Length: 420
Image (cartoon, rainbow, N blue to C red):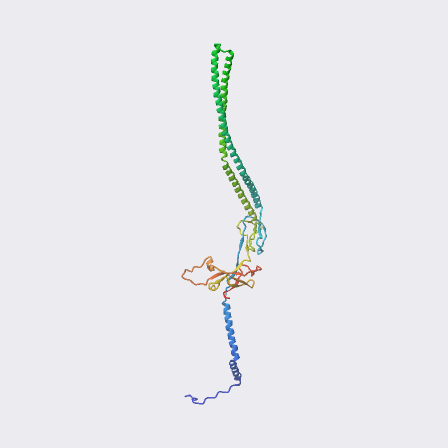
């Protein structure tokens, strides 16, 4: 057994003077912990920490942000519509121009000559068309008059035939009468000749019979000549009728002639319209010698110089509309769960150090990888899931981009407030 087993316990040594203040501080600390005011302060502190944690949790969970974002905008390439030599350059790189500003001027001499030639051709075609239009009523009236005159000539010719036929009938009747009188006179002469030989009548009576016989023969010849003349008149009247009927048939083509004149007038009008189109095109080409800014923006990437020979479609410069810009933010697909169009956004721009207000406009139809030149193919055995990024379009609020201080391509850090 140990030697000290069963011995009386040794009393605690007396505290050293150095240990006394520490014990007293511990005792005072314990007394403060038991103090109700100290407990109240601890409880309030815990509550404040909990509330601050809740607010921080709600704040950091109320938005989605990314640093994979930049400002985007339209890039309008400016090119001429006609060829020629550049004689004037009105803008420089990075200059801001308004819509309608003349950027480049091309030598207009050739196009002015083309306009003058087209104007002369149009005036000539228009005069021809006007003359053809005037010929329509003139031809219509003239052909109508010809038709009426031809109808009247036919009627007159028919009447002339009838009159000539009547004269011929009368002449033929006179011939018959003359022939009958001649036969009586010849018979009387033969009887008087026998009687004068027998001296039964006087010589005077015989002479009268001879004269009557000669007169009857002459009357027959005259009547026959008159009948022949009347017959000729009938033939002449029939010829006039045939000519009048031919003229009538010719005049009957008047509607066709009017149609031909009208068709010529329409053709002349079409030719004038074609020349007018040529004139309009020439004037357009002349106006194209001045290259106009289609929108307001900043001039960039200018490649044209004075004296350069340019061709249609050749890019001369680029125009950046600074009023129409937006933000393309590539959020992770896991950040889009609560993101919707119309939600407010705060956009911090690195170049200016300012924050701008905006909102979500739309979400792209596919991930950025799908728009790459070589989209990834995941149909392999070594597939590794990668969180994709989806482009989201953010637009600035009205009046936030005044001053033209923002440029496409600038880096930004947007925050989209998915919770109010």
